[in-house]
Amino acid sequence: MSELDKYIVSDYIYLTMVENGIGLKEHLSSGDYTFLDGVFFVSGAQRGAIYDTNSRRVFSVNESACKILPGMSENSEFWRKLEPLGLVTNEKIEPKSALPELLQEPSLQFLYIPAAKKPMT
Image (cartoon, rainbow, N blue to C red):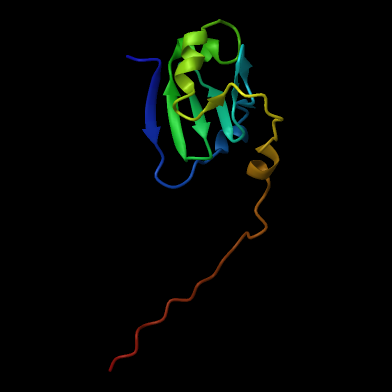
């Protein structure tokens, strides 16, 4: 199995794992590469995930990648593979955190839409 398995999310990425105490990491870097704004890493019990909120893609990563991404293990080849996927850059950028926007509470709590029968003609 490869280190990076791609999973497409049809519409939205739900970040409920933050509320459950699982760490959501952004702007990870190694050597020349840095996560782009809107790209996050979450480590799970056996696997992890890279969430790209820019393109609505989710990448499942194995245990080895879960050690590489937070810097517990070095592997420049793995980071190089993330560049064509649009997840990292080797340019120097000033990171802007997207977490406050993602974690804000929605102001709309309830919406009522009445359903009416179509008039018979």
